[in-house]
Length: 284
Image 1 (spheres, one colour):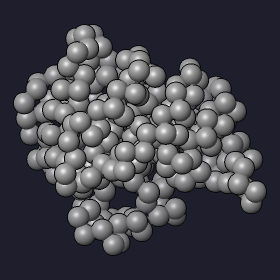
Image 2 (cartoon, helix red, strand yellow):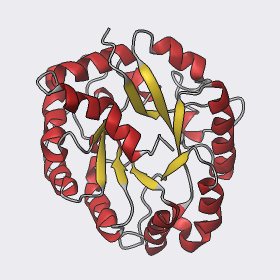
Image 3 (cartoon, one colour):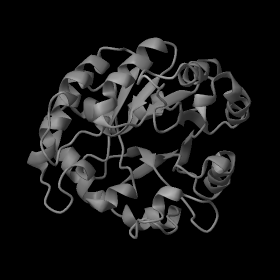
Image 4 (cartoon, rainbow, N blue to C red):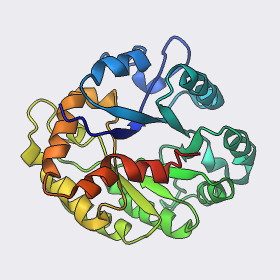
């Protein structure tokens, strides 16, 4: 297995005996504890140096508890170098207290909140935008996690929040299974032209045919992201354990290494390590 050092910027950990995750209720594969020991077992042979914990859509009443739980967990698993927590940014200015609380935690580097909140007319909700804009005051980034059909909304959010750093999760969740390249590709190009956006090359096989995907299926989508964002604004991630629906951890890493085999050693280091360290401020 390739021994290049990796920062995995999208790892989920949860204990279903401790917190409630409504979205897991009908998911037999995932509806059980997924803890650092499980992650270690699934990543044997891969040099995962650090990980970014990303909030796991725990019940809205348990957002702080989730952050506190994983912070305590990081004392046992020192590879947890950063936390992307959840906050109800759709509350607008009323979320300030939660952001103040989270910002006091040195591990918390960003926020993720799903889904986008829209007004009745389909436009972006003003309070949601205000909540995202507040992140700049606390030096917190925002992970964008949405359907490829919502990328136009993402573009609008980024344009209206120029002081916030954004990380697009899962290359915008394209429909690779049906090979729907447009309008995803056009929206990715537009989004990449905004300098405060990074893109996670993550969970790509999950959007292809789970049982029969090949590198050829996903390569055009990965290549397009690299063409648009370049190697300076992309980061590697797994989306473990959600990725297990379609791939092993090792296969995903090997596939991506093969796809970028023509890049320089410096570019590969940016993708798999250096950019993550910078955007999630993992040095402090």
